[in-house]
Image (cartoon, rainbow, N blue to C red; front, side):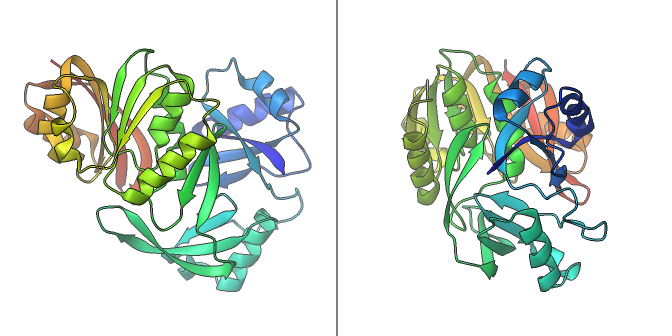
Amino acid sequence: MNVCVSVDKDYGEYVRRILVSTRVFDRRYRVYRNNDKVVIPVISREEALKALEKTGIPFEIIECSPPLSNKLSDTEKPPAHDYIGGVAIVRENVLKQYSVDKLVDILRKLYPKIKSIYVKKGTETDYRLSVLELLWGEPVREVIHREYGIKMYIELGKVYYNPRLSTEHYLVSQEIEDGEFIVDLFSGIGGFTLHIAVNKKAIIHANDINPYAIKCLLKSIVLNKKAIKSTIIVTQLDSRNIPDFLDRGIADRIIANLPHKSIEFVDVYNYLGHRGTILYLYIVGSSIDELIDEIRSVFRDQWKIIGYRRVIDYSPYKYIYRIKLAKV
């Protein structure tokens, strides 16, 4: 398996030039895109770390199967897709742009060891589950994916997972201070929880209503047990019931990654927070100004906005934002 550097597209060309100038770029292969990431083949993990560790740019070193430099022609543009643990997932609208044979051919060239290709037909239920249909290959439902070296156990079709959030997981983890109490209210399989646990000595209460997500998180904790520094408490609850199990004002930071409904849990945030508590609120919208107005009207004078970041594209003209608030 080859090794690549995965970095946000905004930094892609800059990082590529650094890797070329330091002779770490593996010229046998092509740079390629994976959604909002640029994936750059390198000659070794250690040399890539040495070349990039002082740049201050968030990046991830991953195992990869990059295309050979002459493998794909200029007319074989890779479709938008996610690649998770040997499985490619494409959205249904991709089939309007590519024939099945062409799609399979391109993805097999891009990932020679690919196991299967699924089409995402939609999302259903409060668990945010992807409805997947096998397009090519063998049925695969359990994979181990890596983010920044962290192993994540994922049951495809039973949990929500978006690999495009890997940089966001990393960035939030770097803001945490040792000794803090973190409440990850809608943890899913534990993207934020695992990054924090590996990088910081904190206490993390990870909660999700989906039993399959909790199962994945628990398995991931075992997979990463030698690297974990934090204490992790895991519960499977409706987040509205969290106040029945935690003391008022216990949270130093709250992560609320439920973009379509996060604004409905203000009472929970108020209960968990104390003066100075930081809330990372994820929300979907087309205009940051409109979202800020909506948040101010709902949170009133109990929280103040101290920053925001556009995290990923959600759909044409809609984006997922992280709004950072502090309790006053």
